[in-house]
Length: 239
Ligand code: C5P
Image (cartoon, rainbow, N blue to C red; front, side, top):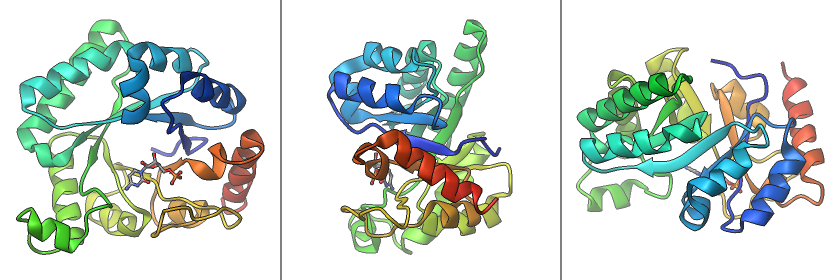
């Protein structure tokens, strides 16, 4: 599952014009864009449609987590947007993830389109061992990430969103056909911002990432299109 251009640009803004301006600059230069809760809560499906109309594949990062019936309904509701990727929280459980997959596939078939790449979020990287213990999860984050990634695969999901530091272990445990989508990416020339556990694009691909979620190094650059091209060149240099 190796995309030609693995870069997914995170358009983390509630401002539809700003998102559209960026997306126009980046169309054809990146593998797609990631639209998350901030954008979706402000602009809804119509906002997503306006971005998708530029021909950019969309990773709809809405992290659904509810009872199976509700999550299945949410997957049916976003199907007309024909997203490239959608995600759910693996902590919602096996039945929830199975219901999500079934709904996504059924809805896509009805619409005559390809089903989305359905991803699981395992453990948010904002949660460390202490935070997990507070929530009743013993054994540390790494073990929980692997446990939930395996559960996601069992449910028929296509992959997970994970940190570059987790990618190698997940790839080893779950094999080559499980998509790994990795944020926290910083090219050598970019500022770290608030990200602490970062990886260069080349390193992330080396440890098993299929897709790279990149925000500020591209969206905050004076010339976003050029930043995307420089990252692609950095990646091509290692292929
Ligand atoms: O600007 P930056 O490259 O840090 O943006 C990364 C994007 O990936 C943001 O949308 C952020 O919410 C998301 N993300 C992350 N770390 C995770 C999961 C998602 O940075 N573990």
